[in-house]
Length: 270
Image (tube, rainbow, N blue to C red; front, side, top):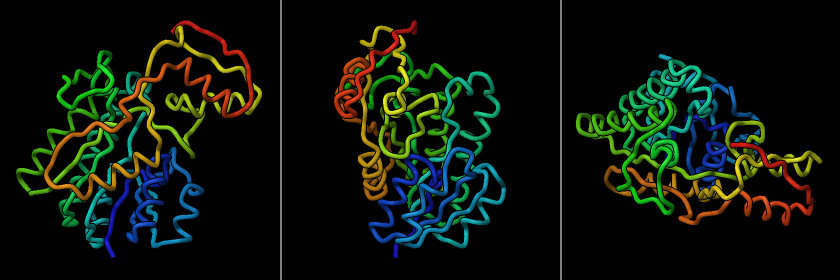
């Protein structure tokens, strides 16, 4: 039975990945401090397969010793501080989780003799304010927030661990991910926010004129990309999205159609 470690495995994307790994017959070792993830997200996977949860901070010194005896084939590192505004307000905390936590997981992968390290990066945050859709991997990256910086600079550590310890890696830059289990109360997740507002009878807010575009990708497609990344050869950075631009205003129209609830949104300054 293949073995996989998933940090952040009780979260939105992480738990969807755990579901997929269980479907594929993996024994799964989840690391999550449950600061934003939920045990409920893992209920079905734990019932169906071999899933063990360790509630622990990803930057804890105990992580390496926990992972070492498990001897995973792959380490999927999804645990992160994802709030851009928080990263600006407290860049030290952001760096502790996103940089030191990532190095800690690299050490866990190395000492656990993992063959591959798969990282959840961010396309938009690392490319900065100006990029085209579809976005080629060759696009210059110029992160505009501490969060974006943290997701970008760790790639130098990936290269170091590849060159020094022969740990293969794939870093995946996700577009705007949406789907079941997404938190409607967070900074990100406009799909979940719009759905939550409409179903709850609240008036949603669109910031700006609504013509700003995003690339929205479904969470199960992202989980599939993560699994595929664990199987390909070589080490690299890859963008994960649909390559299709959708304006926020058109997205809102789609959600109104899907929910059957038509409430005119508030248009607010960006």
